[in-house]
Image 1 (cartoon, rainbow, N blue to C red):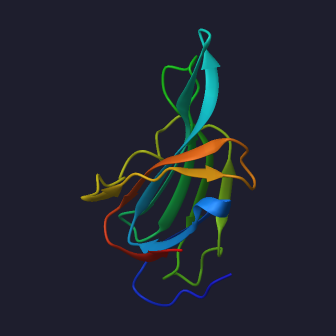
Image 2 (image 1 turned 90 degrees about the vertical axis):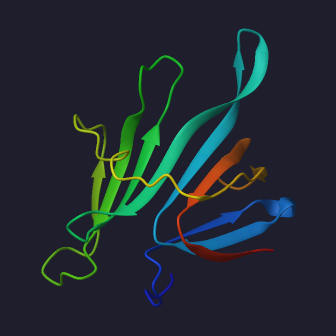
Length: 144
């Protein structure tokens, strides 16, 4: 675990085995993970999960995981995590599992000018997953 020092509000770390390792800190971020699927007899990459992180208007930090399936009309919220780092009277972390009627995940995400695409094969944890897109509004990090 890391201490909450500095001005960054979020951090993401990706270990891509022999392809490399990246750790970034940002004010907000969005990560799209695609994985190989077989559709109509052809292999393709499908963006199945989006993790978005941003500060809400009330100062809360939110991390939201949204899943996408070919048979669904739109994404479904899988996990929503909120923290209030400036309010000692609220729980440290609040986890909410499962779909929500309102769209909390996608609202407030920033279309970032600092957008880059990465092609990392994720060997630990998500077999055959491919980190396709990474959005950051203000970041610092390193690629090892």
